[in-house]
Length: 241
Image (cartoon, rainbow, N blue to C red; front, side):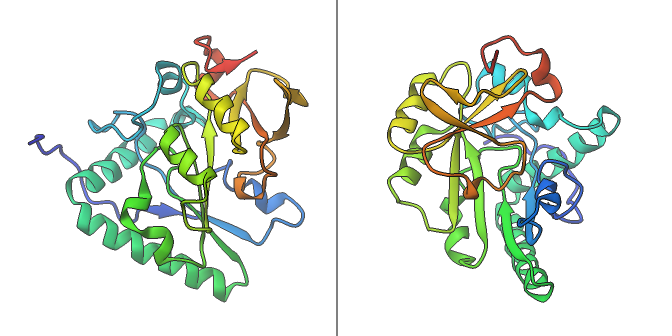
């Protein structure tokens, strides 16, 4: 049995405000009513627990977790480590609080004429479907990125609830999987160092930096993202030139 790691119970698990990436839609005409509730955990094995089981070395080093003002990184790390250890070491209580926060998000959006959305893997790659969350909240649209081929193939094959959307993420070691997923009709997120091309390897590239509402993307496309944070200095093959 793994030794219990130190943590303090967080005041709350999820946030609606304060993330430049997930707040972008508020400034896009026609997308202002979508309100994203996000859960940020400590990526890779930063917390002492692995929450990104298919992360490559390039992915781990260039994680979006490091994007944003570096002055606040230590504070972000502490909060995300706490939440991750809470999930791993007190699962039942964590999930009870998560269900409550999702319900409150739905109520808040209904009261304010907003469309409820949730991204639970903002900085992790956990198979939340094992907790039946998507079926419990059919009026919330959930979406995530994943590097787990089995998950994205289940999504492409229509095996997940209709209110859950997945986009596969390319890294330096899963290119074969990525193009198999594109051939099957799925979408793949690709990080480019500078300008986004209009097409890549024969597939249309859409600008994934305009907003984060991936469930609104057309099918069978590459979602282009510009390198951010430590990704700007990555030359492992995770970031494409």
